[in-house]
Length: 393
Ligand SMILES: Cc1ncc(COP(=O)(O)O)c(C=O)c1O
Image (cartoon, protein in one colour):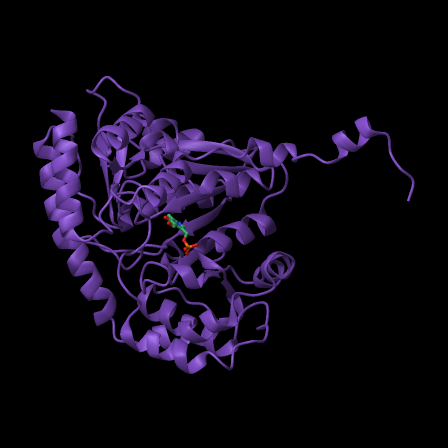
C-alpha cells in the first residue's frame, strides 16, 4: 500500500463533524461520578428500580439455550401478533402485525422512523424541554430541528397554538409528541391531542408519538394514543417500549406501529443498523405481553407513593414542583436560587452528595429547573430530600 505523508494521515483519521456536534450531556458525567462515589445518593436514573417480574426471570432461564440465532428484521411473527393484539386492545390503534416493526427500544423506533421519513433539512418540531435523546437522534440524519415551548404555567402540556406558530409550511414535516413526558411528567389529554391532530392534517405532517411511559400514569390521567384518533393512523408513528412497563430496559426491546406501507422502509434501515432486536428479548416480550397487568400496576402504585412524598417535600422547601401526571420524574423550578441549573446540580453533588439532572440538559427552556427521578426506593428518596433541603436553606 502507498504510504501517505504524515500530515495527510492526521487529517484522514478524525472524528466526523456530525459526531463532534452531538451535545455532551451532564448526565454522563453525573453517572460516572455516581459509580466512582457510592456515597452519592442519585435521583438521576431514567429507568425502573424494580427487578424483572418473577415469571420473566424464569422465562430468561428457560430460553437461554434456544436464542442464539438472528430473528427476522421486523421481529418474530408471534411477537408482532401479540403486540398487535395489545395495541388494538390498550391503545385502540387499528393496525395489523405487518405495520409493526420490533426495535431495540423506543429510542431505535424513533431513529428508524426518522430515517425513513425525514430528508436532509426537513424539519421536525421537538418539545422544549424534552427528553435528551431526541435532538441527537434527529441531528444524526441532518434533519432541521425546530422547537415548541412547554411552560410551567401550563403544567408543561403542549399548547396547540404554540405548535401551530412554530410550523413552517415549507420545511416542517414531523411533530414529535411525548406523553407521558420525560422530563416533566405531563400527560396530553385527548382534547389537546385532537387539536394537535387538526394541525397535522392542515399542514400534512407526520407525528412521531413517543409513548415509552404509556403505562405509568397517576390520579385521573389517561394515556391516549394519538394514532387512535379518527383518520390519524396514516400519519402517526407510535413508538413504544418494554423498558418502563416491564422493567426491561437492559433487554432493549420496543416497537413502532407505522402507518400502512412504511414498515418495509423501516425494516430496511433496521437491517443496516442492528439487523434485529435481540432474539432473547423478543421471546421474553411475548411472555411479558401474556402477563397480568398486575405486575405493572404494582410498580405504578409504588411510584405513586413516592411521587406524593417527593412533590410535597420539594414544594415545602420552596422548589415549585407541579404534580407529575405520568412517568417517574419531578421537574422543579430553582430559578429563584442564583445559580444555573448545571451549577446547582454540581454544587449539590459536591456539597451534599446528591445527583439530580440540570434542566438545561433537556433544552433551553429547561434552564431554571432540575429533574429528580423517583425510580428510587423511598428511603433513598427521603435521605436525598433531607440533603437537598440542607442545600437550599
Ligand atoms: C421519553 C423517552 N423516550 C424513549 C426512551 C428510550 O427508551 P427505550 O429504553 O425504550 O429505548 C426514554 C428513556 O428514558 C425516554 O425517557
